[in-house]
Length: 194
Ligand SMILES: CC(C)(COP(=O)(O)OP(=O)(O)OC[C@H]1O[C@@H](n2cnc3c(N)ncnc32)[C@H](O)[C@@H]1OP(=O)(O)O)[C@@H](O)C(=O)NCCC(=O)NCCS
Image 1: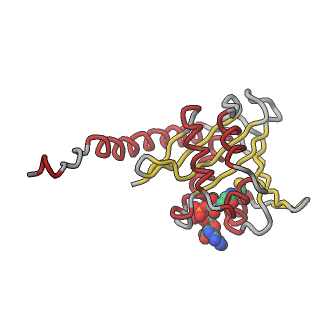
Image 2: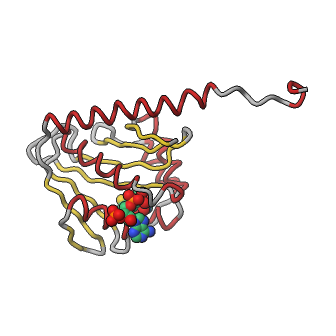
Image 3: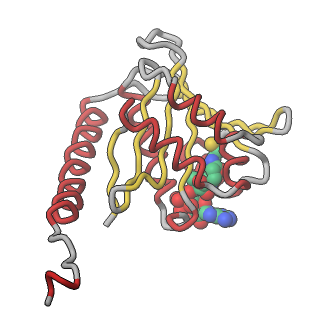
């Protein structure tokens, strides 16, 4: 049973490990070019968490995907802008998780005071273009990259409530997955079983 939860600095190594597990083709789509595992590890070890919010998808305790919001300033200003990037491992793709994580990121960006959200992808990235079209509508192509821009409406009590409910249900589903896994009795050895 998978679950979502917000990520933090303690998850940096798991984020890098997930990105390094992606097939080369997906990693290229994620970073719009070729990047080495060493570059990924160094980027996530040094991520500026004052400008980042990320939500992860976990399965059996392993991070299998995440959406990352990079804000252009640590505190909201009248011009605050956020950029979204996402990846999901192939075994978990095509069941709506990309759409769900992206929709959550839109709510979070609104609630952090962002005025505008941008999503960049390569022109051949059909899943990302479908997600962007559904959520954002306006897309334009420039320098070999497709850019989707969404002017965000201001946060409302409902958008704060939605994020709080999602965090609460994430904590609950995370606990339901965590405790049975860690409390499962250790398998008996042949000697013990005899
Ligand atoms: C982009 C990505 C996160 C989508 O994740 P996902 O969980 O498979 O997405 P969903 O299941 O929510 O599907 C989203 C839409 O794409 C469509 N789709 C998914 N895979 C597809 C494929 N291989 N070809 C065409 N359409 C596809 C789905 O049908 C759905 O369309 P709909 O909303 O019109 O029904 C995933 O493909 C991925 O990690 N790609 C590599 C990294 C990347 O490209 N990141 C984006 C740039 S930052």
